[in-house]
Image 1: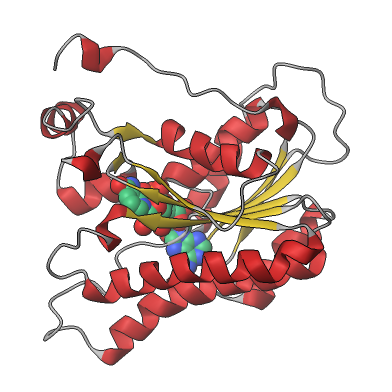
Image 2 (image 1 turned 90 degrees about the vertical axis):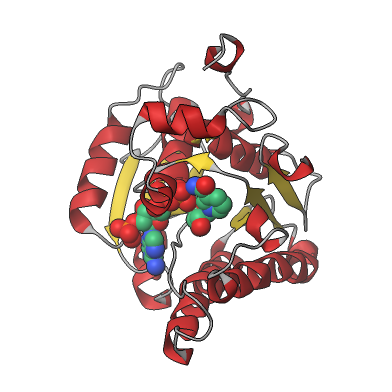
Length: 267
Ligand SMILES: NC(=O)c1ccc[n+]([C@@H]2O[C@H](COP(=O)([O-])OP(=O)(O)OC[C@H]3O[C@@H](n4cnc5c(N)ncnc54)[C@H](OP(=O)(O)O)[C@@H]3O)[C@@H](O)[C@H]2O)c1
């Protein structure tokens, strides 16, 4: 790894998010967990949602360790968790109920459901991918649209593979592409309520999902594989999360899918 690749970079964080409450669907690992940690650092409240109860408990404990720089004007518990499938609207409603009042919703849930050669995956596998991605976004959007006040946001997740697909990813990527379209359509629909809807299209980000999918289990393997990219490394979960916080905070951005990939898609 070159000396340049090792320079730690801190993305600027929007202080306006202090005191806000965010439901993070997929907040128990990777980009979602990093977002929850940054929001807490800024003095926000977070409700983490993930399916695995042990991972949820560990994530809640991890985020609770984060101490905001400023004093705490917050009412109630600052870090909460709900074990739920994000595509289950009834179960997801519990997270909103627990939060009481919600300002922002970030959806980073989703994995490799439906992946495999098109001749080998079943219609059921692809249906599951759409349930996970599209119905997950839909459930979050329905709850958010009913409960968020003007100024609230919904931030969804995509990936650069929608533009540069890899073999065996047709099912999941069809669902991810639908999330991008959903983002734009929902932004138009909810604009009169002054709710904003955006998505982040990520390149390769160093997370448990990415390490598991790529087989790059060690830091050294990650660094070696990332060395050939434009910025000489893959993105960190924190950098990825910071872009979602930007979209939550900037009051004039809506209906956008912003690419955060370290320029990977340019070359
Ligand atoms: N990392 C990358 O290189 C990359 C690139 C492009 C796009 N993305 C996308 O970015 C998002 C976050 O990825 P990541 O790398 O941070 O993944 P990650 O480390 O695997 O985290 C995903 C989180 O989502 C939760 N989750 C998954 N399915 C869920 C469901 N149905 N309901 C509720 N929670 C669910 C997981 O917990 P449970 O399993 O316990 O539910 C976990 O907390 C994903 O949508 C991914 O496809 C990632």
